[in-house]
Image (cartoon, rainbow, N blue to C red):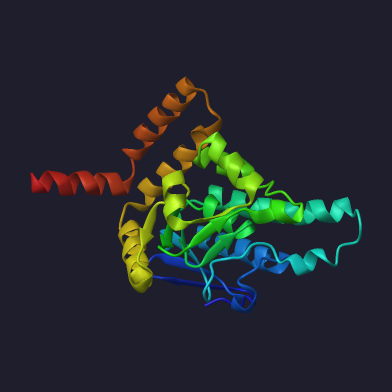
Amino acid sequence: MSAFRKVIYSVERGIARIVLNRPERRNALDQEMLTEFRDALLRSSSNESVRVVLVTGAGKDFCSGMDLRAFGNNVPDDVAKFQAEARNMAGLLLDMRRHPHPIVAAVQGRALGGGCGIATAADIVLATDSAQFGYPEINIGFVPAIVIAILRRLVSEKRAFELIASGDVIQAKTALEYGMINRIFDANTFDKDVEEFVLRLASKSTSGLTMSKQLFYRTDTMEFEAAIEAGVEINAFARTTEDFKRGIEKFLKKT
């Protein structure tokens, strides 16, 4: 277990579990929580027993977004401070993208603003049938600026712009239709269904998952032919791994 104040971190059965732990504030994000979250990700990336990371929220909501009370303490036009704080959030999303293992976000209740950004940055999103997603920043004259680069890669351009321009909160079913989430589970069996999902994912080849994630996102900025060549490199390297050799041996014994 971790000694963090605003997140809970633990590792069990190959699963690194990161719990956003400010239920009294609907797990609203402040700079301390962002830093602790990033520290937990760093720990999980260097732990050889970890194969999958699961991110959840304590209480009824996943994460309501940035803690707006902190904005009330801002010194007017302190741009350097604002940039440093924004880079902490940006760093978190980049840490998630660069993490060697799949990150699964399990969303119950609301995932709004920065909380929706965290879900968007996860590799896989599981949600209850009553979960809600949205970027309501426009309603206070703000912009979901940091997550836009990821959001427009997930959904169509028209959908992405509508989400950030309207500030509408959408239900899990709509988020699934838009391509923002992967699966919806019944709220009554959510914890059990999530556990089964992540354990099944953790049973897959660690090296295979790591290389798949790295290649998947590495091709984002590549021309088509370069992406194909990157696939050739990973294909060849994957054949040298112990996981592949064991997998082939097991397959041949079956046949």
